[in-house]
Length: 301
Image (tube, rainbow, N blue to C red; front, side, top):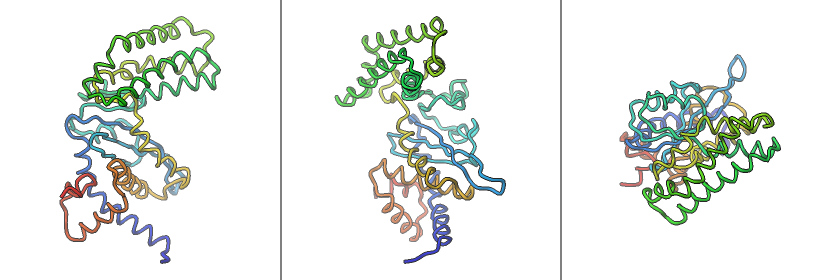
C-alpha cells in the first residue's frame, strides 16, 4: 500500500491524540504514594519560522510500577516543569543527575528524598583519568568500581531490600566510603595546584553532591545510579541524530506520547504494536475507562 507522507503524519497525530488520554492514568500509576522515581531530560530541536529552537523533553520512570512517562511541557527545562508535574504527589524519592533544577527538592519545598547518580561521578573521574591524563583519578574509579561490584553481588544473591540496606551500611562499606571522603578532602583542600581541569571538576562535583550520592544507602529499594531513566531516554537521543528536528511543537508532544507507550511496554515485556492495536480496538468499541486501558492494566481483565 502506498500512502503519502501527509496522510501518515495525520494518522500519527490522530493516534497521539487518542493515546494522550492515557497519560493521567499512567501518571497516577507512576506517582503513587511511596514511589521511587528516576528522572532525566534531553534536548531536542523543532523548526519554527525563526529557525531551529532548542527545547527539552523529560523522562520519568518508575521501576516498580514498570511505567515510563515522557513529557514536553512547551520544551522548558526550568524548575516549574518538575514542580508542576509532581504536583501534590507523595512519592518517596526522586533520583536524577546533578542539574540544579533538582536541587529545589533539597530546599524543603518537597518532602522527597533526592538522590544523585553515581554513574555521573564515575564518568567525570574517567574523563579526568583518560582525557586529562591525571593518574590521581584512578583511586576514585577503583573505589566507585568496588561499590558497583557490591551492588552486583546483592542482586546476584537475591537479597531483600532490608538485607541490601544492611549490607550497604556494613563495616567494610563504611570503611571504603570513609577512605573515599578523606581522599576527596585531600584533593579538594590541599592538592589543588597541579590538578587538571577535568580532575578539579570531578572532585568539586563529588563534593557538591556527596550527600545525595550516598543517600541510596538509606533504603534497599534505592539504586546507586540513574541508569533506568537514562536507558529509557536513550532511544530518543538516537532518534534525534536521525531526524535532526521536529517540524512543530505538536510533533515533539506526539513523540513524547509514543515514547511513553513504547518504553512502558518494553518495561512490561509487551509488544507496543499489539498494545496500540488493542487500545484502539477498545476505544472503537466505546471504552473510555482509561485507568483500565493503560499498558499495565489492559490485559488484566
